[in-house]
Length: 61
Image 1 (cartoon, helix red, strand yellow):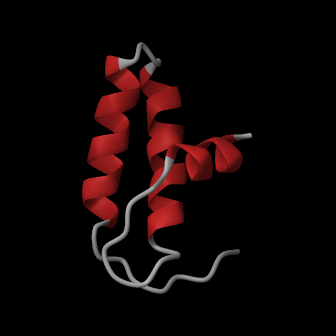
Image 2 (cartoon, helix red, strand yellow):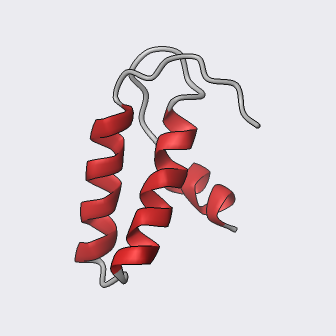
């Protein structure tokens, strides 16, 4: 379980991460997983936040 501080921008994060993953050659299922991880990171921040490459890689691994 994870603390959720603010859901602002979660949907935008999903769409952005999903699109980026597909453009990078990921399969649709993998892109969905990555975008879910990214949204999970952003809702753990107060306000509209960004997900860094380092944060996403740490979560995926």
